Amino acid sequence: MIVKYGGNAMKSLELRRNVAREIGLLRREMPIIVVHGGGPAIERELQVRGIESRFVDGLRVTTPEVMHALEIALCQLNKELSQDIGNAVGLMGRDSGLLVGDLLDPERYGRVGRVSSVNTALLHALLAIGITPVVGCVAVARDGERGASETRDSEAGSAGTGDGEAMNVNADTAAGAVAGAMRQGVLFLTDVDGVYRAYPDPDSLAPQLSRAEVESGIQAGWIAGGMLPKVGAALSALDAGAPFAVIASGMNTGMVRAAAHGLAGTRLLP
Image 1 (spheres, rainbow, N blue to C red):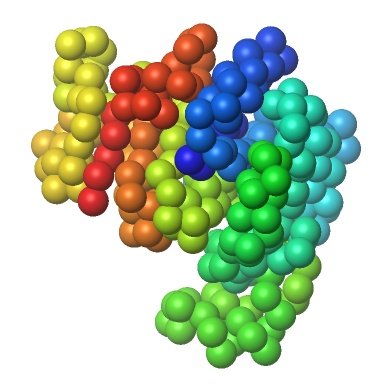
Image 2 (spheres, rainbow, N blue to C red; image 1 turned 90 degrees about the vertical axis):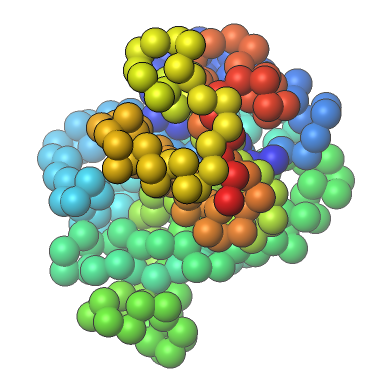
């Protein structure tokens, strides 16, 4: 299973280590790949450097200065998470071309991109010897020659161009790309227990939803606000080839294993 870990599930060191321990225990039952972001760590690094955060369309505008700080913050967090989980190795997109992709729109967003290929051979090799890959959400932009010929979005102006250097990618979509490439399910750890049909009524938590039900829920308005990007990431993972995606809380002890076994959270199916 792919576990996307980050955001509010990293609000404190104690919480982060509790979740890491649960991931380590879950690994005894199934192979795990962890994909993580690290908004709080990035913000701290930017503040230390006196760099202001700016967002456009919900994406962090990533200037070269922001990219440098972001990569430093995520690399440190990556190694700390690997140590917390145990018997794990921290990786970034630079490592053996693990995450490669295309810049979205350099003029609008800077060094923000999307993952288009995953080095699954590296991940399979690590899993085969019992090592848990811990993947940070920094990818490598394909060089301009390849990007121009292979981009999936020929209408997006500069989309598909790159220079072989690091770029910032959304952790949710990166986890979806890894899940799709590995053809495995993905668990998105967040700050809510799942998708509710009548939030916050606990009895309205949906244990399972199809794509059609999600689309209906969006139209009807019971999927709205902060849940929209969460279900969007889950649907993107299904589009990429993941057999299922789970949205569950990473804030409470025992939830990781329960969600992985279908006993907690909301499971989205194609």
